[in-house]
Length: 249
Image (cartoon, rainbow, N blue to C red; front, top):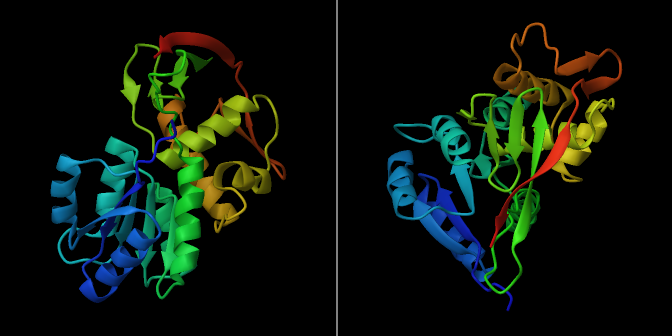
């Protein structure tokens, strides 16, 4: 049987005049929407239930959206889309550097937002276990002492310690692991990581690579794993092996 459970969204915005009509519209599109008027309320709701995606305003009283986003992507790895009136390129890059999956500037067309939501969810789809199916054999990627479990989105070092990575960092790492020792230019990385709906800039790709380097390189200022190919892009200079993990029911 198909899973008819609606996609769960958490909409965080202090402007009730925008939040409430948008929640009603999204509900009509088949989403299950919970609302929060502040980061504090959002954190409380997150203790009750984990959504599939978070729609997050940046400028809010108290804790702002940037701080909450950092928490979401690092501790929970939740896909996040910023909804904000701040549309300058530097603002967008800052949000994406933190780990947000997309950035929608107010005012926006609700149908476009729905398309962005579905695009992000496609990229962030987590395989789900179905008791009626045969067990799924888990495949692990290993490289230079690191191990990535794509199903759990868990990165561990040689000692078995888990290193938190955002959903954007996970997709970037997967792109490198699936194409080791190949030069990937910025346009190709954008296509592989963000899809056709990418609204990033070359510099944002550089910053995401820098963030990933700080987590997996011995010395991020002298990277040995993710190397820069001047005029070309980036290359993962490591042997990547795929090995089976535990079977999942």
